[in-house]
Length: 118
Length: 112
Image 1: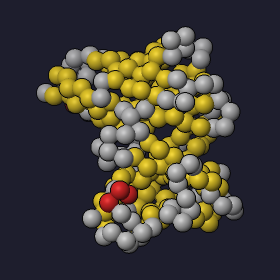
Image 2: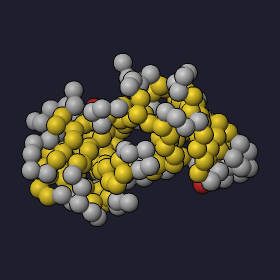
Image 3: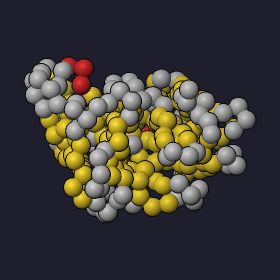
C-alpha cells in the first residue's frame, strides 16, 4: 500500500493569490496524479506528474494556472495560481502503487486540500 | 463519450438496514470497475475491483455486482452501520491509456 500525506488540509485564500499544495508519498512511485473535486461532482484529472519530466495536463488545464513540480519519486507540488472563486474546490493527490489481481494498479489518494477562494 | 453515472445522488437509511447503489457506464474499451468509499475530509479508498469476467465481488458487508452486457454495476451494503456514512464513488478504468472515469458519487447517510 501507499500512504499519502497532503498539506495543507484546507485553506482560505484571497482572489489573485497563489497556493502551493504538497504531496508526500511513503514509497517511490513513478507517476503521481493531481485531481480536482468540485462540490457534488466527479473527480477530474488535472495532470500527471512523472519525475524528471514536465507534467502532462488534461484538456482544460494549463501549466501557467496549475504549475506542478516533481523533484523526486516521493514528492510533488501543485500550485493554484492567480486564484478566483471558481478555483474553490478539493484538490487531491493520487498515486498508483502495486499491481492488483486484474493486472492494473491500485490507486491511492491523499486526504485532499479543501480550498476556498474569497 | 466515456461517462459514469451514479444513482441515487444521495440516500438516507436507518442503521441496520440494507441499501443498493447503482452505477451505469458507457466507458469503452472497458478494463475494470472499482467502487471507492470517501469519508468526509478523506481521500477515496478502494472497496472492490471487478473485471469484465466477474459478476460479483464481496468485501465484508459490501457486495459489488457487474453486468458487462448492460454496463451496469451495483454496490450492496448489508446491515448498515453509522460508519458507512460516506460518499461512494464508481470508477471505471479505460483499457489502454491508463485513464480513469469517475462517477459523481452517491452520498449515503446512515441514521441511528
